[in-house]
Length: 227
Image (cartoon, rainbow, N blue to C red; front, side, top):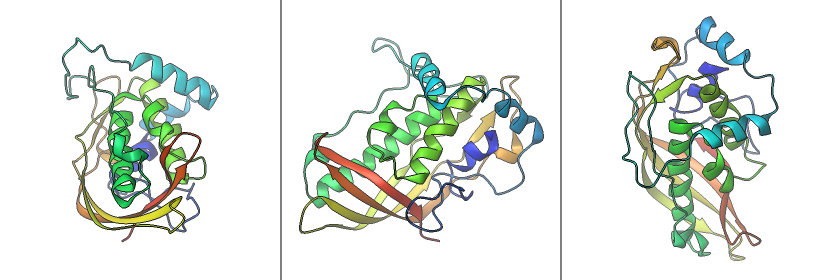
């Protein structure tokens, strides 16, 4: 499960829980090799609690203080005081620009989740129907609950084409994502080679989004790679 979580982060590993789009892959992926048994057993042994309990534990452990300085993750330990991403005002606009702002926020929230184990920002902008989103939300809190962590950087997003339907309540986007390499470390400080990734350069992605009238902003209901 630990290696699967990283495979859901750097572009290579396919996720079983694909959403309504067939062949969905999770963002930011591992190198595709078989996960280390030690890593898998470590996280599976800690997964006896419910998903909600896991998320709550991760969330309570990942709330930064505004006065504390951000410390990036390294081989010495996980990131500290990671800034919580803020939903941009544009994400509340029912336009192509609003759709793209929401997708940029989704990737910022995904980086925050990978860096802290806190699922709340990503959860807020993800639909329950999004298989990749839910896979990320289930797996990363478990990794951090097991005191493992990842060293990575935020993704860079370049939009190619975005379209909002005439009803202004749904839309799609094609874009490219460049992701930094990801290194996974166990609580012992050991780097898990099999579960670390090389990153990607301008990898093509596609997403479908829905405007949530109750919340007043766009939410991702499917996202996948295009290769």
